[in-house]
Amino acid sequence: MNKREARREALKRRRGLTAGYRERASGLIAERLLSEEVWKRASVIFLYYGYGDEVQTGKLMEAGLSEGKRIFLPRVVSDKDMVFIEISSFEELKAGAYGIPEPVYDEKKICREGPELVAVPCVACDRRGGRAGHGKGYYDRSLCAYKGVPFVCLAYDCQLLDSIETDGNDIGMDIIITEKEVIRT
Figure 1 (tube, rainbow, N blue to C red):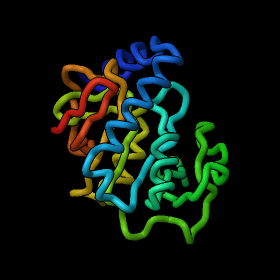
Figure 2: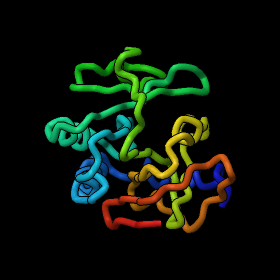
Figure 3: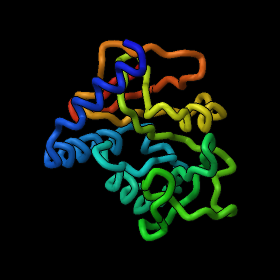
């Protein structure tokens, strides 16, 4: 399935989930990631702010901060680029690009050394680690420098499709976590 078709199908499915289901599923997905060795070993983690009907990440942010991990969230800095900025609380987030809460820009808090784990949002994914985002390419461009770092896709089971066409610009996911299973690619 090409990315446009994959996005359309997965968004239709995701939008069909009730708010209660998304909340419960997001909790299960967070619990699964928190029990993974990649989470336990990582001290520098790139997360994202789950916005709208995406998998919610608040529990992961809270857990990471309470465990003393360094948590970084993306901030869009141009129409093609984003940087990851360290946060220490939810109060540091303000509505940014596309209305999504982002850290306030602070040059001193930009991650310079690189992450040990990256949690990536998706619109659609497949069991081989293929992922389709919203189509702007922010994550593929921003994360290409971190090859070898575990990339974990957080998705509802309904976003998991049989196959998604990918190309050389797409970063593959190492682990996909849904409310029903953990898939290692």
